Length: 305
Length: 311
Image 1 (cartoon, rainbow over the protein chains, first blue to last red):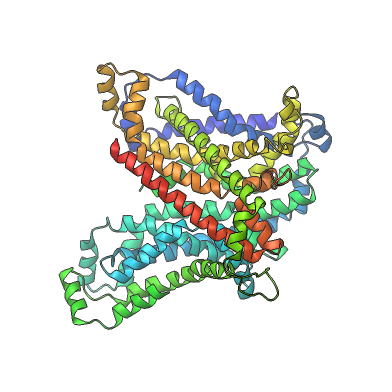
Image 2: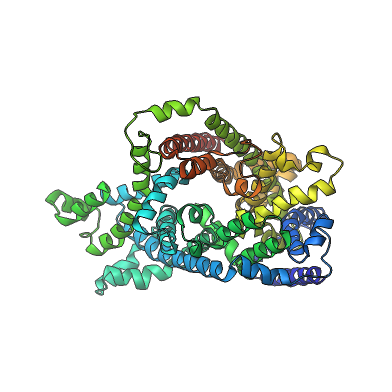
């Protein structure tokens, strides 16, 4: 019962918030739209949205049941009595705090280094595109977009093990390096639209290239930084295959990898496993609920070129 | 690596012609700062991305098992790949999966994007809801789907044999469950792309068309489809590339089973190369896979973009 209540109040608050947000200038032109509200489309969209909600609902209710309740029903029944102990047990058994700390460390590291390196590389490339060597580097990075992970995977395992990078630091380096190709593609187009006069004026006043980058270019890149930050964050947080092949120490496990190991060990104990899954999904989901408009516009900006 | 050394050389000694060209282009001498911004990150990229590719190609011509001694065997691995029933099966599965999942993802996403683009109540709330799967880890939500297919569906649809016996254990139908998970999650991104495409179409076009007596279907065919063809290209190319490399979804649902009926190429490379003692053989497989993906992507881009121009 409580979960259903929580869900419905959550829904109500989000929808009022989004209605309030619709009054913003960007949506103003849409509100001029004189079409009548299309109730058939609204109903259809609402019905189809159920398919998105069903798996999440299932995750929540199963996580709150006792093993007997899970075995007795289809899984969709509301849990009664609610068994909060599942979370305590999952917290212990899946070593949740450690996995959360690892994932947070890797994600924050990846985002910070990605923003730092990708902006510098892109700025350098965008302002020197007329030079053959820079253009060459640009196309070299672009070509790398076609390289699928499986071809890198096997040699990478050897390489990271050899260098002692089969840990969280290694993952940060890999996310930073592998994101570079796509990020440069996103940033350079944007940087080339920044008028060069801005920089020339600063240069005449004696500013160095570094200073121009730090004080003029980087602040102007904020919308793109948001985009790249979001894409990198979602990728590093949820990625499974890279931690699976790179990490060797059980203490270094990230959240998805911890769920994989946990599922292998306790695959019949669904209620505890689902509590663990729910905790693994929750952090990003909560962040998303509170910043959905920002996240969506960021992702769109990165994809429409 | 050569590009980097070349970049450094170009900037170091500036011959007369080089300088003349720079002046003509309105640029001054390349400040060293630009090079320092560029090379460390590019070197890192070359070391962790390009080097493994080269090492992989190198080992694909050997009989390296992942440990112990090895020697060159020429193109032996490549010849064997084309005769290996197991490898051919994974390519068959990956392509079947990618094609079906791409079609479903794009049809469903376009339909939902059209709905979201209509004047509906609480549009931003629905848009936010449909995007939720994007922020979930595939593997973890996959475990929820696994429970749904193996525990819930057999009880809910006990009248239908395929579902009653747990679809994940059916060699013929398990792949459809993987498609369901893949499409469910991929739609989140595709819907948002289509929606932003639809929002670029001016409403006046539809008004003019309906004044001329064009029906809803004709408006869709003659206005909507041509004007979002660029977004269609993005979605299809990204879908195919992503789905061909399917891995997480299978790990969550079937682990390649029953038997090897749902094993994808990525999964075979992972299993065979890391624990199966086929390091060299599977790197050769990965090289072929790389070529296949590149060719498929380029062909699609060429074909879809030529259609964009036609319309």
